[in-house]
Length: 380
Image 1 (tube, rainbow, N blue to C red):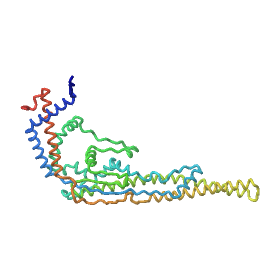
Image 2 (cartoon, helix red, strand yellow):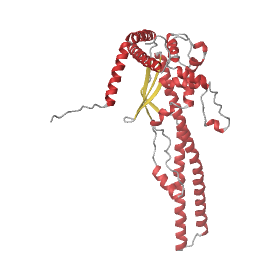
Image 3 (cartoon, rainbow, N blue to C red):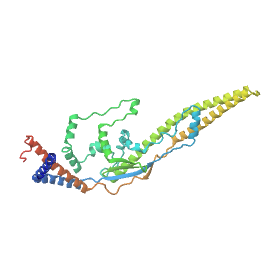
Image 4 (cartoon, rainbow, N blue to C red):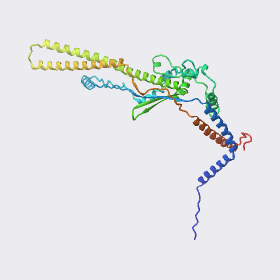
């Protein structure tokens, strides 16, 4: 009896293999159409590579400076605990974690100021801000880049354009006045458009291992890229310093109140000790001596606590007046000499995009014909 082997291949694998072969055969049949469409994108790629603006990237590396002074902190905390006063860690909250710095780049107020930093461009005689460059009609110029952006917007980005037209332009958010206005910020529509572009050209990378940060900015001109990077660094320095100053002022207010309390307690204990010694002068009893020692210990504790809080208050006052930079540049901002974009990469990107569009359109037109649509005409 002969053993008969029935291969019985997997139907799904066979169907998938047949579909793949049919797909490859269909693309080969429409190779002329694919070549024609691809040639259009090759021409567009050549034009984009020739007329593209150079991109320069300026960067700087810095480390945050931390001022942690814990001198007399232990004695102060222990004395305060004995007196029932919780001063906590006076140095807590004065330093901002570097991991929070990237969040600063997405804040409304930071970007609102950054987009208004004046930058120098060769095409303009005077400095121009990114906000004016994007919103003021006198700075809008007809270039090949604008043509390509228009083509991309109304081809690949057409669904987004349709959705924006359906939704309509959203009105600007109006923040009510009063105390809440100090805590709430909102972009206008024009500012938000500039912010979306700004978030693509300004970035901050945190090296968690070595503890340094790298800030970079991109622009079509080298000097403008360096100015934008320096402007972002200056604003970051300002905002972090303001944060530290706010913490220092809050700490100062707290210590001023505690200093008044310890001073009052110290003067009260001093007066109680003096009155007791005056009223019990010449009374050599064990009870009076014990009471005198008790009052004297309370006076010494109150005086020591008042002295320590006064010292801490003086340190807090110095911190409020301190204007030391909070960021130390390891690699300062410099004007880049080489551009970071490549014409060959731009051309390759357009070629790949053309292949995807041409092959995708073949499959899309076949899908429409299979469902009874007579479009495009003469499609076989």
